[in-house]
Image 1 (cartoon, rainbow, N blue to C red):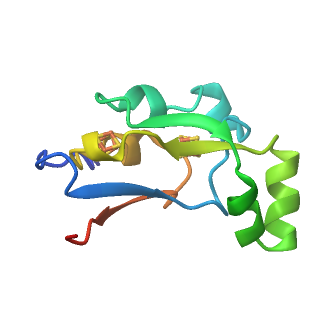
Image 2 (image 1 turned 45 degrees about the vertical axis):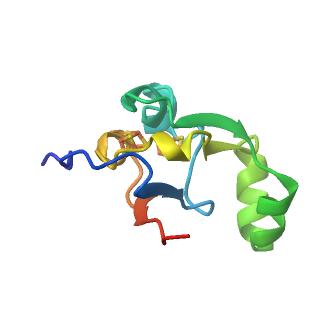
Amino acid sequence: MSQIRKEQKPGLFVPMIDRTKCEGGYHHACADAKCPCVPACPYSVLEIRSLTTADKRLLSLGDRFRAWVHRNRQAYVVKADACTACARCVQECPVPNVIKLRRQTQA
Ligand code: SF4
Ligand code: SF4
């Protein structure tokens, strides 16, 4: 079932990556498709990067070990202001519930 949504004004929503689930190209489905969230985005919002020290600190010991086994690579939001909440990345990610679109709170 298609999850693609009507595009919104850029910057109203931001993708949130669940650091306890993102496989960053390790999981066979994510690896086979070469991190499909990245090419799915028409606005280059996402990139695969190394887990930051700050993000690692937020993980449990078990999740940190899992991330290490998975080479500490995960999807990162690098152009949040360009996201139109189209949900193509959500649709293409083979791991359930990794990417969630969160409405930005007004400054
Ligand atoms: S968000 Fe999904 S598709 Fe993207 S790297 Fe993580 S698991 Fe793979
Ligand atoms: S919701 Fe659309 S614009 Fe936003 S990161 Fe995902 S694919 Fe890119």
